[in-house]
Every structure is written in C-alpha cells, then in structure tokens.
Image (cartoon, rainbow, N blue to C red; front, side, top):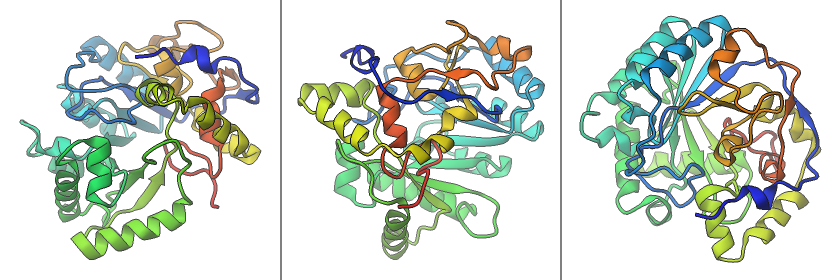
Amino acid sequence: MRAMLPLLQATEFPALRRGKLETLQINIGYRCNQRCLHCHVNAGPDRTEMMDGATLELLREVLAARRIATLDITGGAPELHPGFRALVRDARAQGVHVIDRCNLTVLFEDGQHDLAQFLADAGVEVVASLPCYQLDNVDRQRGDGVFDKSIAALQQLNALGYGVPGSGLQLSLVYNPQGPSLPPPQAQLEADYRRELGERYGIVFTRLLALTNMPIQRFGSTLVSKNQFHGYMELLRENFVAANLQGVMCRTLLSVDWQGYLYDCDFNQQLQIPLAYRARAHLRDLLHEDPEGLDIQVADHCFGCTAGQGSSCGGALEST
C-alpha cells in the first residue's frame, strides 16, 4: 500500500490549538470481520494488532485522572477484542459515556450472539456504519451480503430500544460517499435514510452522520491508483470553510492507538503524525500532563474535515 504522508505534508491548512480534552478515541485493534474499500485504517480479518491488558488498565486510570467525559471505541471491529466488554463495564461504572463504532455485521460473528443485549444493558451509544440505504451500494463498498446482515442487525438493535425516542439508547448511522466526492447535505440525506429504512424495513435511528472519505490508507491508495488523488485534494481545498475550524474533533479529542500512543486524531494516527509537543506521547503522560492549549499537527488531509458542511466523528459540522 502506498505511503500517503509524503503527498500530504506540504500544506497551507490553518494552524489549530487544542481546547479542553473531553474525548478519548481509542483504536483497540485492527482486526475486523470486513475489509471495506474506504477504510482509512486498513482493517481486516488478517490483522493481529490488539491493545494489551496493561494498556487497557492504564486507560482506565487515565479516564479517572483526566475526568474524561466520553470514551469512543473503534477498530477494526472493536467488539472482537477479548477485553472490549470489561473495558465498557469499567468505563460506564466511572460514569463515562461510551461510544461503540460498530459495523453491524459483527453482531452475527461467533461468540457475539448477545452483543446487542450487552450494549443495551450497558447504555452504550452505537454508531453504526451503513454507507447507503440500497443493497448494491453497500455490498459494493463493504462486501457481498453485508447489507442484509446490517438491516437484520439494525432491526435487532431497534427491538432492544436503540433509536426509539425516549429509550435513552442512541443509534447513529454513518454515511460516507462511494468515491471521491463530498457527502450531500446531512439533513437532507438523513430524511432520505429515515424514509427509505422506515418504509422498507421498519427501522428507526437517532441521527445520521455524514462523513467525508479521507485520502489516506486504503482509500488514498485507491485514489492514487486511479489517478484521482490530486483531483480529490483539489476538491477538498476548493470547498474549505473557515467556520468549520471551530468544530473540528481534534480540538477536544485525543486519538489513542493500540499500543497506547497519542495522536491529534484518528487520521493522524494512521499517518503516524505525532503530537507537536512530543514525538512518542503515550497514555501514561496524560496522568500528569494536560494537552489543553497545545498546537495541533495539521497536513493536507485536514481539508477533509473542513470542506463543505465539514466532517468529524460526530458528522457534519454545519448545516448546508
């Protein structure tokens, strides 16, 4: 796979500084039961990287020491990590809001038959990948049979109260474009999802998050191989919206890799761009250091978070 950082380092992206740390987003491991074309972490069934027990224990200490409000757990398919459920229980016991970034089909993997019930019992917010409401588009991007399994998983989550108004169980769906284009307006797209999924399958959900594909890892390499990389980067730059700088996720979030090292965001993690103040900053440093006010490392891929309506792990940054 082509190294993307040399194509992104020279940048005119504006300087950014950190605000108060509110969220730790941890990549608990790269193992996944899917291999998606747009995946910016290059996850798949053959990946073996997993966060070890000592790092998980350190994470628990950091959550308490820094009074972290939200633990955002990603992967890979984070639920395939053997320590996933214990981590969720401990974080919730500390009063931390927990997000599980779920690919939905993992609910049907061996040993995961009670996963949906576990998430509901723990009050975990589920952020679920569903890049389209049409079978062909989803299977083309994520693999044959993924759409049908995803629908079945959403129906299972709905049956437990997820996405149902008043239940307290949040179910967010994630959309990303099929190729090198910006997402359509999130509000309009959410209305389409509600209509199509509701009428066809009786599915309800809390909100839709429209995410821009990042020109890194597997997606970036695909762009290069199709001679689309520079055109896509020009699209992102031309649609830069300065107002989105106030809402980018890196201002209040730190990304943690499977070894416990810290980055400004999940994308910087995959590009191996270290924090500005220390090349190998680690979770243990957060026990006695506060990153508020520090510079954020930027490169050309950052235009992906600020183009058009903006994009972050929480979806669009503004309504368009």
